[in-house]
Length: 387
Ligand SMILES: Cc1ncc(COP(=O)(O)O)c(C=O)c1O
Image 1 (tube, rainbow, N blue to C red):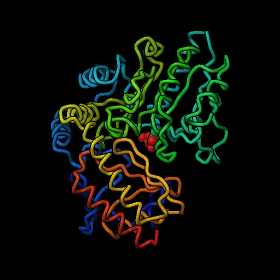
Image 2 (tube, rainbow, N blue to C red; image 1 turned 90 degrees about the vertical axis):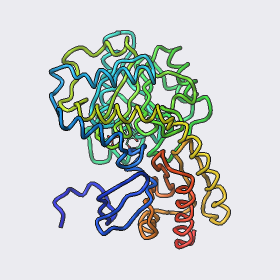
Image 3 (cartoon, rainbow, N blue to C red; image 1 turned 60 degrees about the vertical axis):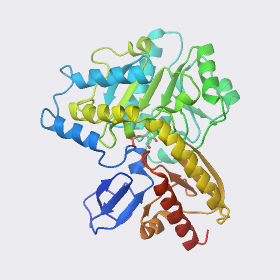
């Protein structure tokens, strides 16, 4: 009997320790981690720089609220402006909250401009979070089931389809919201140039482009942020997951003229951007930049996809392998929902999305030897399952 609500179908192991790409359970069993707490621990578990930053900050000040200036917020906001695009930042605690803030900012901007409506177009297959507004924005009906009334003001078009997007834009629409690569939707990479064309369309029609980089951000795709593959700049961007390498933190950044739509009192969060969250994020971003982690993600991603391509020859159930950096999807023509349980027996943490896609999102510090080890274990799992 558990006193925890049953919102997850959990695997039976209890993880208690991690180091780099490896984690251990309470019985001492070791696992190679191919999911990083769902694209969160991008620098690996217990990264010394992040541990040190958190320990140091914990001895100084955990929390003080946003009633006061928080120097670490000022620094992280500047680092994001310098390493992403000229922006102002709002800090919160999760991806859903960052997207909720983005939706509120976009609506306030549109409503105050008086030129357009504040309706937001999102994409089929997208995932933006579990709050009511973010499930409304999410392009997968299953996440809305049973939660009526759902907030209005959103509609979806097929991902990657620029003509459908253009056709859906009327005077009610004020913004377009999308992921650089759809993560939960099945590691769906849009056609080349798609982000650029969305940007152009937004410019032509006077719409805001909101980019959800919660999963694709922080080096996951081989660039610091996913949009950097196409040299476009969104108006509003959200991040969370890997920002604090596992410490709960989210951020919504916006171009300065858009950010002005928020004034004191328009939006807030008690914990958002507290000194502990900021210390872990600053340390994480510093390591990302100094150790050129996005480049490593790009190189190791190529290596992983190459090895997976060879593996495919002995496993005909694999129908497609796609990825950018270390955000990789291996699609099967069979239901593979039980692969993760089989993975535990072989000492590897695997993650399945949409029932038939194996999502590989290991820490970005994974070595070539660890990729080889992962391939061996995946081969053993697939062989065991007759795939
Ligand atoms: C693209 C994207 N946006 C938003 C979220 C929600 O983030 P969180 O679970 O931190 O609220 C996720 C989580 O998987 C995500 O992948």
